[in-house]
Length: 305
Image (cartoon, rainbow, N blue to C red):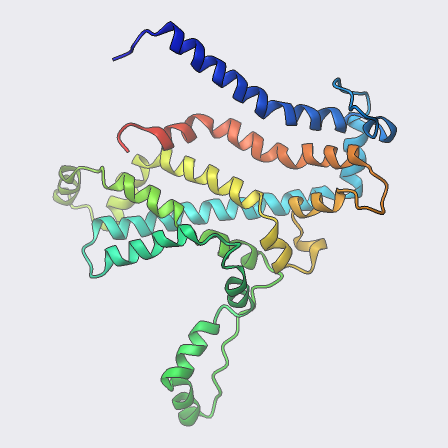
């Protein structure tokens, strides 16, 4: 039922308009600052209309920050994180919803609890694991005595090591392991009717065929929504790439490089260059959101969820 309430409509549209202005004013100020020269950008108050130096500032920041490789790194990392999370979360939710195995709900709630532990909170143990991804397995072998037994039988010392620092693997894997996607997929899979599962079984579809040919096509909007969220999440990461990489010429990201453009206390206040860099760095995620907007909204607010 659709209620016709003109006053409520006006109030709602006014609230939306205020929200739009609040969201656009900072972006407009960034655009204005990026189009001014050094003298104009440091005047007070800041001009409200754009200047004529936008292309000049964009070219300067592109060369100074070497943004080409940095943007390519950010695109690669964000795409891998989004794809890995979509695939891993779908498989995890599939096993929890459609298979009856002991402790599956305990595993689900264990994954769900990690929502309250963002990467910034667990960054020290995550860094320790990244420094040697096989360290936990080595500890298990040492505690159980299997490493000693193997050495006694073969004379070969068990010393497992897999260093993920300064690598794309180290930049991607810790960001893939989040609970958001598993929860999103589980909630959707629970709405799949049992009759559809039974019909697929009667037609001879095994678990993998049911997952590939039925569940994944039905989950396209969920995949688009989750992929968009994870792309933005990975693109905006600053702390983890800063911690896990020391070879920043090869593995540096666009957000890390943007931080280097912000003037320090003892440097020239080139805010026009910093704002020009901001425009370039925020362009790819903005484009992704614009392209995925329709599927993103459907994936989050579909009525059957």
